[in-house]
Amino acid sequence: MTLPELKELLKKLGLPVGYLQWAVGQVPELPYILYYSDEDNNFFADDVVYSTGYAVTVEVYSQKRDLELECRVKELLRRNNISYESYGDFLKTENMYLKAYEFDI
Image 1 (cartoon, rainbow, N blue to C red):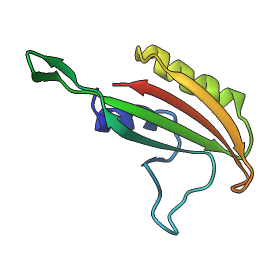
Image 2 (cartoon, rainbow, N blue to C red; image 1 turned 180 degrees about the horizontal axis):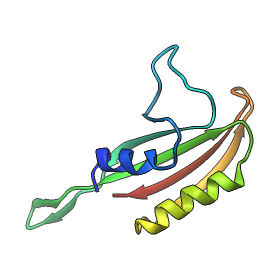
Image 3 (cartoon, helix red, strand yellow; image 1 turned 90 degrees about the horizontal axis):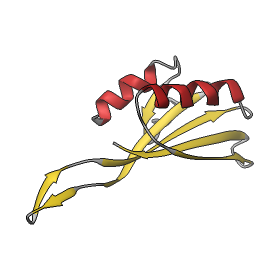
Image 4 (cartoon, helix red, strand yellow; image 1 turned 60 degrees about the horizontal axis):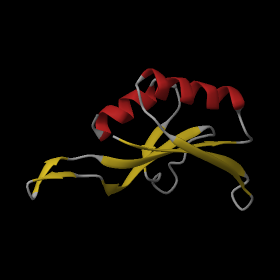
C-alpha cells in the first residue's frame, strides 16, 4: 500500500483527511484525521533495498472520546489486513481527544 492509497482508504470514513498538518486557517471542524510517515521501513537483501515501506501514524481528533468512531477505524484497518498499535489521550491545551494508530505499510 502506498501513502496515496492509504489516504483514499481513510477517506472512506467520511471525515476530512490531511497529511501531517492543516494549513493555517484551514483546520476543519472536529472530528478529522491526520496521517504521516516519520520513517522508512526498508527491507534489504544482498546490500540492496529489496522493498520499501513506511512507518505510519494515523491520528483521529475528536471533541471527546468517540468509541463508535474508534470501532469504525479499527474495522477499516482490520478489513484491509493492517495490524496496528493504538493509544489515546485528551489534549488539554487543544481541548480535544486524540486516538492514534501506528502501523507499517
